[in-house]
Length: 286
Image 1 (cartoon, helix red, strand yellow):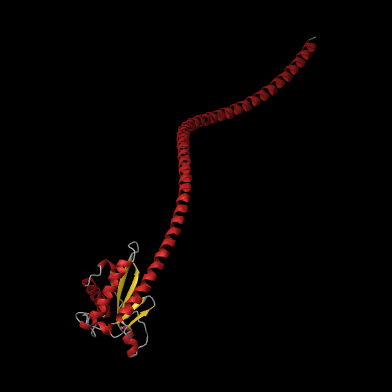
Image 2: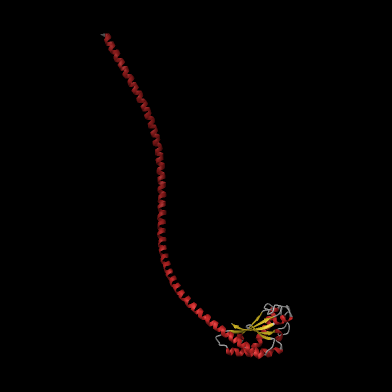
């Protein structure tokens, strides 16, 4: 009986040991699981800490972005206000442009009408001027004909184109602008012809008798006449002054000097030089 009990106790002990080992195994497993869980908790805690830091950074960035967003909203609102103002200005400019275009169209229409009138007026004026020029040419021809008849058929007076030419040697001594006494009879006849012409030509024709002085190519250099410019001009002025003294209206006279630069004959012979020393009369428009 004792052996039986001992055997039962031995079996029971073995069973308990087996249970203990099983419990120990379970405990080891639980401890391992607990350790793993603690490690996981630590990891999660670390992650949570990181997440907390990141969350704080995110919140700070969110606040900064919120501030930037508010600034952008303000800028946008300002820009929208400026756009609205520019739209209003653009609308006003469009109205002004429309008014200007309307005024321009009216001005162009008026300008076309004015141009048509100007063209017509210009055409009529050209016709009138051409008529006056023809009329003046007729008076010039008559005047030169009468003047040549009055002066006689002399070789030192001749008509060249639209000009009446006096040889300077008939009127002046060499290098002088003082009229010779024997030249005055011819100039008296010229003055009489001009006074008759003044009475014949209608008052609406603006005419003048231009007295042109010319010299030959020989230079002159005196205190009175430093060059042929001064000599030719002085001779023309002497003729003009004499004609004025004889009663020719001064508003019908013009004096001009050309020096040696407008020769009739470009040669250098004595005859060519004599021709180039001259006083020319030209009846022309003022």
